[in-house]
Amino acid sequence: LFRSLARREVEYVSVLPGFDEIKARDRNALEAFLKSDGEVAEEWLVMLDLLAKDLGLKIYTFLSGASLEDDYRAIARLTPRLSKTFHIEAARFLPPDARYRGAQGAQQKHCLFPTSREAAAFTSDHGVVVSWCTRKRLYDMFQAVGGWWLNLDPKGHVIV
Image (cartoon, rainbow, N blue to C red; front, side):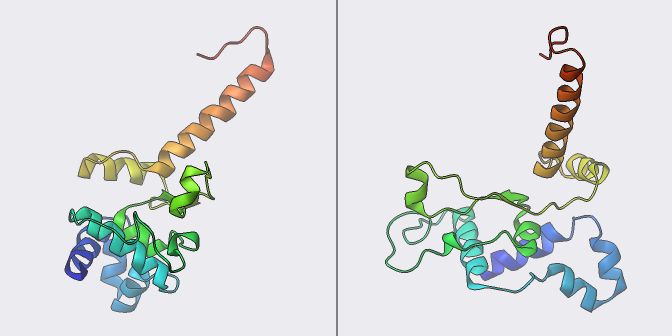
C-alpha cells in the first residue's frame, strides 16, 4: 500500500499546475507542496482505505462493517495532501450509520486549479473529467446570471 501511495504521489501530484516551478525552486518548497497542513491519523486512514479500494482489496474494517473503535470518518478532513494525491476536490466524510439516517454532512473542498484555464488544460492533456471546482463555479455563474435575468422580468423571461 505504501508503494502504491508513493507512486500516486509521484504520478498524480507531478502533473498539477505549479509543480514544475516548485520542483525547480528547491527541495523545501517541493516538500511543502506535498506536505499536508499537519499529518493526522485520519488522513492516513482515508488514504489507506482509498488505496486498498483501488487495489481491489476487500475492506471489512473501515469502509463497511462494524468497528468498536471511534470512527475516524467523523473527524476526517479533506487535506491538501489528500486532494493532490487522489485528485479529490470535494468530499463528505460520514460514519456508516449516518448515511442510512439521511445525513449529508458538511462538504469539504480543496480546489486544485486556481483558474478554469488551468483546469481545462489539465482535462485536455490528461483525458479526465472537468474538475469539480470548475463545474461548481460554472453552476454558480449560471445561477447568478439566470437569477438576474429572471429578476428583470419574472413573467416575461423563461430559462430552460
